[in-house]
Image (cartoon, rainbow, N blue to C red):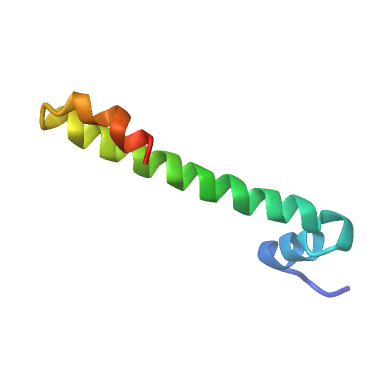
Length: 61
């Protein structure tokens, strides 16, 4: 019996054909989380600068 590392086991399960859509969804979750945090950081910077009236304009870009 061959010893597989944790990463090898994870990739073995992840790359099975019926799990590919789940991997794609996981990438989308990371992408949209990054977008949300980036926008939140920008809004926080505007608030710190006292430019709260510009937040809505930034969100509608």
